[in-house]
Image (cartoon, rainbow, N blue to C red):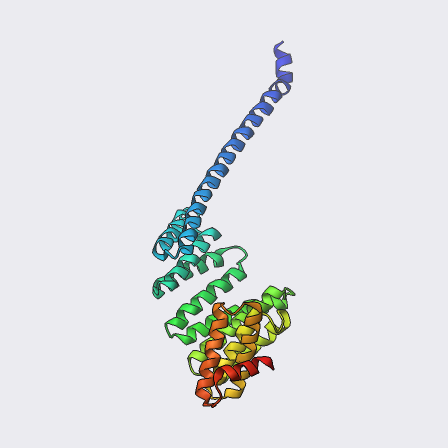
Amino acid sequence: MKEWWYANWRTLLEPIGVIAAALIGAAGGMIAGQKKREKKLKHKRYNINYRLAQAQEEQQNHPKALELYLQSAEDYKDDPDNPDRAAAFNRAGFICYRLMHYDKAIDCYTKAQAIYNAAPKANRVKLAEIYNNMAFVYDRQGDYDKALRLHNKVLAIYDKKKRLGMNSRSTATSTATTYNNIGSVYWEQGEYDEALAYYFKALVIREKELGKDHADTASCYNNIAVVYRKQGRFEKAFLFYSQALRIALDKLGSEHPNTKLYLKNLHKAYERSGLPEPFDTWLARQLAT
């Protein structure tokens, strides 16, 4: 009997080992599942803070929205590279921009940028958004060189996407928006020829991708007209203002803020031109052609 035991002990103990392994595996699975559920619950709570912030932002309660966005970001302190944390910092930065807390806005955007950069595969589209937002802050502060550098970083991201064969309509229209933003920076510096060059680049893309009668194309016509008016080139200003206004009346209606803006700009340009004909009479003929 003793000899038989020694000869067969591995066979006798093998089922016990299988059962033990199964129990250990099950226990490990339960622990992993519990951790996964806990993480899911945490993220749900964080998302609630983010959604509450969005609701406050929609209600124009910006101080409360800022508090909640920052709380959402703080909730992720144990998961510092989570992209949802970057999203919270990004929105907090935008609220700070709206509240004219420019240094704090840059701080929030910089934190969001660091998180996106830390990802194994950096989210270039999100980085472009962050660079763009930071550029708006620097532009508002009058730091035009920094604003232009950031807008050009955005262009570099979209150019890379095009070189990789990802030249979608979205990439093209985003490129047009960036050209428009660069044009606005040059406009604010009084560099009108440079502003026109970039506004026309934006116009070419929007006409191609969206059509000549699209509302976003109309904004390009308006921007170009603004520069021509500033340069005293009223005939050209009238041409582009009128085109913007025609599109806006057709696509947006007479009560839309953009339509009212284009009409106001055209009226102002007409007054400065010194033409004697009543504006309403001139405008009716202008829109009819």
